[in-house]
Image (tube, rainbow, N blue to C red; front, side, top):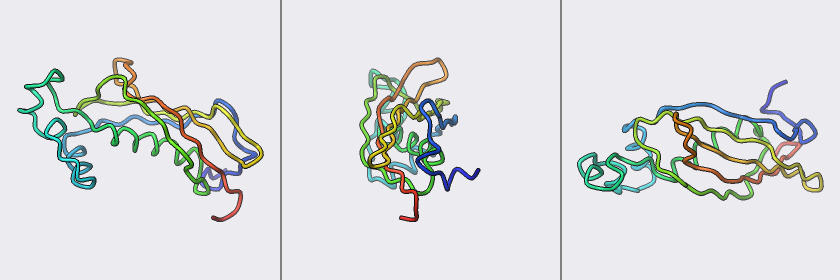
Length: 142
């Protein structure tokens, strides 16, 4: 079955979309250019070295976009994002390899809404982002 044409009735609790990615300084620079976020903590290794983090941080919004990339193939092309909440309990740094996942935790039949648990972990297992995403599954073209 092509997941891009997925119907609400085909979702199940525990279903997961996931991938790993290594975030490079160039990835961060591109993201910062696109968003206008030119905080030196993300872009300037010399500046970052003077902070408690010691290295350039991956922007929190960048982390949020990664979980969207895990949720998109899981939910298919007829999904509409309704809400996202997340927190960043630990830093993620340029050069980190991250495990990104979105897992179905609730199915709401009335409106065909799906609740996803979102998580990003560093290679050492540290959670750097966690949250929830509510999407509506349209069983027909939008």
